[in-house]
Amino acid sequence: MKELLMGNEAVALGALAAGVQVVSGYPGTPSSETLETIAKRNPGNVYVEWSVNEKAGAEVAAGAAYAGARSLVTMKQMGLNVASDPVMCVNYIGVKGGMVIYVCDDPGPISSQTEQDTRSFARYAHIPCFDCDSPEQAFQAVQDAFAFSEEKGTPVILRSTTRVCHACADIDVPEIKAPEPPDGFVKDPQWVIFPKLAYEAKLRVAGREEELSGEFSEYKGNTIEGNGPIGIACGGISYAFVKEAIRGHEEDFTVLKIATPYPFPKELARQFLLGVEKVLCFEELDPYIEDALIYEYGNLSLEIDNFIEGKRTGTVCLGGELSAAEVGSVIEDVTGIETSIPYQEPADTPALPVRPPVLCAGCPHRGAFYAVKKAVGKKPAIFSGDIGCYTLGNAAPLDMVDTCLCMGAGITLAQGLDHAINGLGNEGGAEEPTTAFAFVGDSTFFASGITGTVNAVYNQSDMILCVLDNSTTAMTGHQPHPGMGVTMMGERVEPVDIEKLLEGIGVKSIRTVDPQNLAQSVGAVESAMEEKGVRAIIFKSPCIALIKPDEPKRVDAETCIGCMQCINEIGCPGLITKNAKATIDTSLCTGCGLCTQICPVNAIG
Image (cartoon, helix red, strand yellow):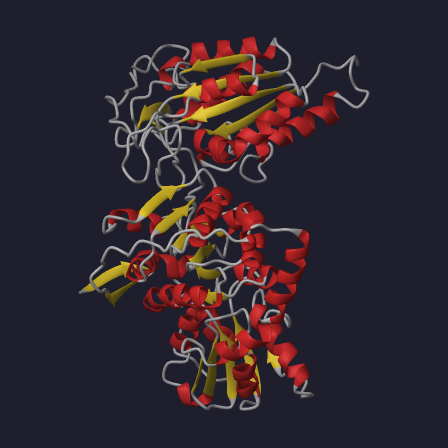
């Protein structure tokens, strides 16, 4: 039947249609809906899990593929860095069942620390790569990727980007049937990676590039459309932008669409280059297609100045997202051909209001940050943050995140900062030591914070670990994690206790407090600051999206003195000013009560 599907849902149902049997992954925007859709549409015997991190997910998928099952692992581009250890090796080993690594890139970036182009990673890892340009094509591409993976005995990367992941299209979806059980694992020396075997595997996977390039030149997803004098090379969502921009002027252009960026379809590219007078390249993130065309252009011994224009020539912006309007603007500037997209805002368009990112009203992280801030006062301290909602603690008026690098790094950054500031011959100086704090969420702690904590204990670091436990993976959509007691298969399991885990690691001083109880939380931080070594404070209170809000608080205008301490101290969006006094937006207030503990005249209740 025909269904309206998001791009990620299309990949999920395409994988089910292809007979996927084991699905693993780690949540990360813009990829999260894929695994969730498979869990929801599970025909009954597909195993699905949110893995503890992307490395674990990739290894689970590889093990299933060794046994002949079709497996899928999902992640965003930053997660591919975490998974790179097994991903860089599994291509050398090979697979028996089809293994697809679905990676969603985030141009902009919109919800990531950095941009990263998975096509370049695929080339680096010698892993064949398919690229998605629309939900319809993604539905078919994942099925093609599984077939190709099994035929060649190699994992395959399926790459998408934010706009394809979250765009919607009508797609004919076949009846989803339960897959047949896999053949099973056959013991063989090939599954054990040894230096000698790795050397031979490197020659094999790198040496097959020419063969696969020829096959991809015949792949139905790679096309040359039109026969105009101006060539446009593109791939992924940029193909959709190009088609929209040149609508009505198709006769002026020849469009090369690349759906398999690695190995690059060289023969098709040469055919395209020899048929046009000039080439414009449109692609998000790296100039991957552009570089490949420049290479083939050189092999053809063509010598025409400015024949290929794109990111390398500064014609197309090197970073961020593209749009149909921007593509149209570049085409008009370079060719003089008027496109169908108006790319200038009307003069009377009002500016959009600025909405800085902020922690939700009632977020327990606000209480944790404020408690630390109050306890520290003017004493020297440094606050290492991490990836999650709580990164927003860097904003005024909290100003409680001094560093943020990658998942789990706050814990180890704090150790390095402590060694550099308080150690290295600085001990015993006249200045008061700087207290190193590390903030990490519960999901991130399980994903990549445990290792750093072990490192801190083993190397006798001096730091305070603050685990902000809101009982969910909040930033990416409230997916379950090991501390919640439920799996993606719906099974109830014993939750992993963070306090007991810290005890097992060797942390001697552990306190668990409610961050919405300001006095209790401040007292815990003050006590921890009197101690040395690795000590931990678990600020435990559920995300406000998981619980029913309490009665909204209200300000007694007669009692309020207009000091604005409640607003200036915690920056809750539910607190606003009216008639020079504080008031509460009852549509936002969750009744957490943090502001009632701050008001110097008890005007809030």
